[in-house]
Length: 484
Image 1 (cartoon, one colour):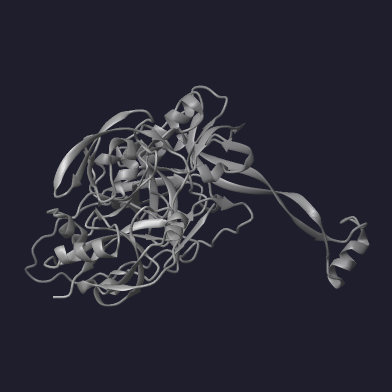
Image 2: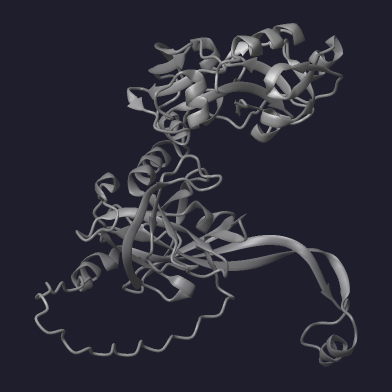
């Protein structure tokens, strides 16, 4: 289970430790007060709330409870030479501070949920449910229990595939999350706080949500009540089809607060198929660092709409560099699919196998062009630099810059650019900072201070100038809105 803090709130994965206590049941709501009918009121259409009982009766048997055992190492405290069953142990425990002992191995237990996707015992759940587990036990609704084998897990999408040795098991039908509509009713079945096969319902609140650190998953947001222990359980549409895996909640308390997130089932099934075939997931890698296209950046690049993904950095030797993709390019389409925003591109690239050749449409120098990219394989490697320097003024931007010395270029691993000494006015408001290295102006590389001043002067009639800067170990475009 992991916590992700953001604005004093937490995105909580829904794994439930067995040691936790159950919450008391809340009292039923009071009956609504009846109001006298208004005279001559128009007759209202009465809409009955949906009945989920048939769905639960039919699909519930394919939902399973998952309990796991993990071994963790920690430092124990106690009284050397005394057995816990010794009468003197209790005396020392009450009146003497425990003595720290050497590192020991402890067992912890937790609960999650899952669902059967094939009659021969393949089960989908969350990766964090079985992470670091030494033993996984699956319990069916008919009370049978099985030790499960972890076929594979993918932390990037938080999907895991399990296998139990059984036949003729009930399974869930797989739906199409792309057909889900915001406002549509959905149902969750799982084991919140260890209460097995609990059913809750709500509506789809939003689709395609991007959560911090989850660039590969377009989450389905719902207001279905899910809590710790629901992790890995299915999210059904009204036709009884699984459309997602309940994975996270957004909470300030650790419990449900009306914001729940599910992994779309098409993403999960693609991962499961790869895990079943090879035990791991292979993803294509483009080798670029990207950022969002803001309206100001779109204006500086000559784009009519703020869409696509701006390339702020190209990894040396990557598929992108070999295909001719450059910093300042705006990727508009990948493999024939539109890149609506920067969060779309990682999912599109990750869905294509390494080695595949794809067409990429980029916007460069105020016109589009098509490139062919042979994708590499995704890995965790990263790149880039640092800073230091002295000064000279540059036009209406409000920056003082200096040339980079050969030593600074070598240390920063750059071949061009100018060093920012001080900022004010438009540049300061745009977020430029002393110590930044300005690499390009509106996608044109900056050679030195004189060249930088000339580029700024050439764009003096523009409302916005895009600066490509290097800061620490990252590069990014900053749109600077010039003073009128």
